[in-house]
Length: 278
Ligand SMILES: [Zn+2]
Image 1 (cartoon, rainbow, N blue to C red):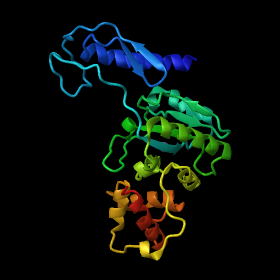
Image 2 (image 1 turned 45 degrees about the vertical axis):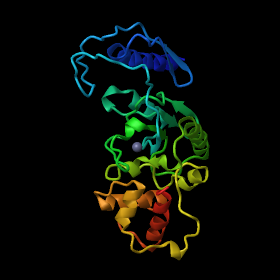
Image 3 (image 1 turned 180 degrees about the vertical axis):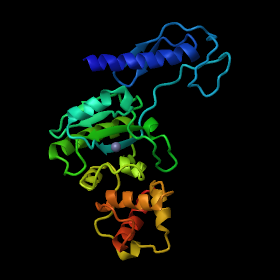
Image 4 (image 1 turned 135 degrees about the horizontal axis):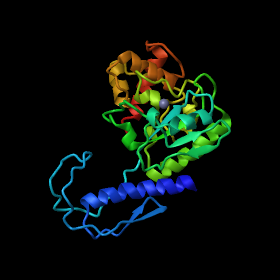
């Protein structure tokens, strides 16, 4: 209950802060998501001069506003393993200001789902990352941490809870199937989570992420396709080609370490990149 009140208060403060600076008095009540109503006090038609450092242009006076806005909704889901030894350790890490890390959800080994931060707010889970041309993944994603030290299989109750959560997120925010990816996919030079134990195929069968066809016919192999082009088209940051290959193989081949694409890897890559075209 306390957490819920805190989240609502935080949303109120965000919306109210924006409203005081930018919006005319027609706004009296905002509908946020499906649960939170926010009352906003009357606002002068011409707001005072702003020195808001987070605005893009520091106009002296805002002479016009608009009541048409809401918070931004997630369009990606990024999956992590915590690389810690317990949920309690992760909660402690996320509670400290100095760590500057957080996620929307933490799922423990017994399948308990902890919702730490409202989906519409921006958690700090992705860090410096890139997928396609998106370079601020935190602004458009939900982050899910799975309690796992990175060297062990994921517990069945944990994955079952994850699947339920993903189903809810996908429906709530209309998240495209291809947009369920891992931290290592978006930060291949820095991160290796989730590990090769993560059941990406099981997720893809349920509609969360893409997966290669079970039988890849030789006719699907187009040897003229540059592997880096295919990786880039999928979304990988290929400025470091070795890191991109390792990340691809970790996710789609469930293999760790090798910087070389063998024939099976190439066939899979050629089969997969076509799926990302649509
Ligand atoms: Zn991570």
